[in-house]
Image 1 (tube, rainbow, N blue to C red):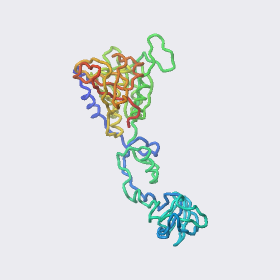
Image 2 (cartoon, helix red, strand yellow):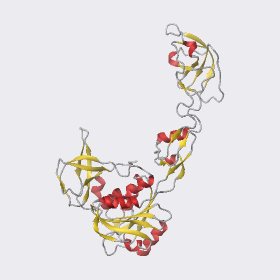
Image 3 (cartoon, rainbow, N blue to C red):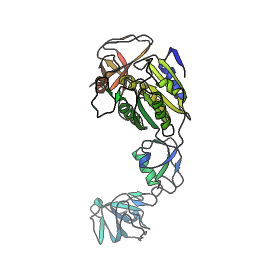
Length: 413
């Protein structure tokens, strides 16, 4: 563990974080449990899709040649020799001059090469009048026209949304190998903290950080779990962390990373692994800790003030979670917006201001700042829907200028 008096840039610290994030072994999951994850195997079709020729419409299976002279005023009349329902297990057959009533999805009878939709007939039962010629192959779904047997269906790295899960199900796959959701464990440190549901006495603060960070981790795609509060006690913190080393892929603590006399996080972590505490040129969120515990479990030690904690999560932890998920895009997409008021910043520091992003009738964006610079202002954080990024070399923003905005939208997967 080392303290770095030089301010590290945001980009430098993020590079160190991402370099320290490995991978998680793929696992096999049921289809619905795999939703939102990335496929970790190549999937091919074991059989053609569709697996048999079937009707695309409710109508009559016919031979196209038998309808060549049909016209609206002079229909061709064919004898109806049976029905073919969807789900028919045996294939029926028919000869020249005949027709069979057929449902959508039902197997095409042997001898038929087209389907005439109901609306182009008189819907007869014993005989049917066909009012126009039918083309060979009309209203047929050919076996293998979607996927031939042995053809690639989905490749490793494919994101599994509803349509991909539908394809896997159609191919008979009820389980697939995927990149799993990282197990992220969150704990808050501080003897002043109490659990939600209690009324705080003088000097006590209700723990909100663990709920916020757990929710943010879930939004990033992780399997997040909060384990509550750990007091400023060396042994208690060691025990809490050691108990999670085999249960977590990522550990996140909030609080106890500043230069205060009672910050025990640094001291305790030195006994479990290699964690570096440093100062990053950002506001809020300057004090940061990152490293590994036990068998290379990454740990993020975030500041305790709620705004600092969320900004730190968005800047460093969220990209790490997305890397573990195998995502190509690690950071949230940004937009350019017109600042509705001015703001100042310190040269050399990247500032993250809370904002409210508006969509203009012109299609562009505007943004208003909300809340002051204090990193404890949770109410204004709850009213915001974005972070406004003021780069290191910028010391002031005037109303009307374009600024970079990070929308804090749900589920950017």
